[in-house]
Amino acid sequence: MAKKLITVHVNGKAQEKAVEPRTLLIHFLREDLNLTGAHIGCETSHCGACTVDIDGQSVKSCTHLAVQCDGAEVLTVEGLASKGVLHAVQEGFYKEHGLQCGFCTPGMLMRAYRFLQENPNPSEEEIRHGMAGNLCRCTGYQNIVKAVQYAAKKLQEPVTA
Ligand code: FES
Ligand code: FES
Image (cartoon, rainbow, N blue to C red; front, side, top):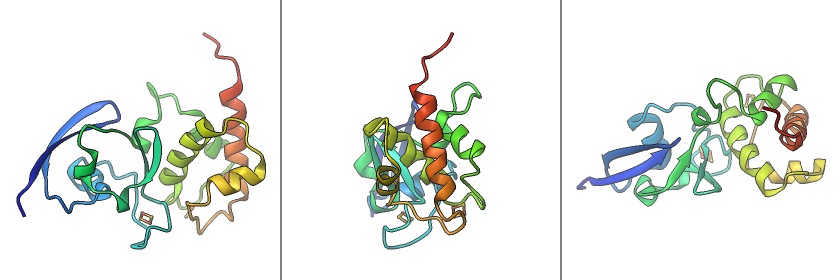
């Protein structure tokens, strides 16, 4: 199949690549751009380990074609920290021990990043529901809820110079 030239803005940088139309976004990110934070945990769109942010929405990148992202803004876990300072969601997972093996973590972080913009002050139930598209086999989710609560609180703090 002929390749198609696409430009995808990933973590603020334009990436121009020729891809086959059938290339899944997760493979484009991992294999063409070497952004290997997003993981593959299933073939049935359940686990959410591949979750990235596309044009302001959480998307499972295993169920999206790279060619569909021509011109789109994509954010991956590698783009969350700014000038070496962790984003509040990363700090939350770190402080509250929201990860063990770390395989689900990039997807969890990207989902939490978007979820807290959708719902800046969520209840525990809303967090569990809002993160329900992301499976974790290690943590039992309890500390992930705490991590999201930590990040929500941190994001509400007034910014100090
Ligand atoms: S790899 Fe499991 S939902 Fe994408
Ligand atoms: S930390 Fe291992 S799968 Fe979530």
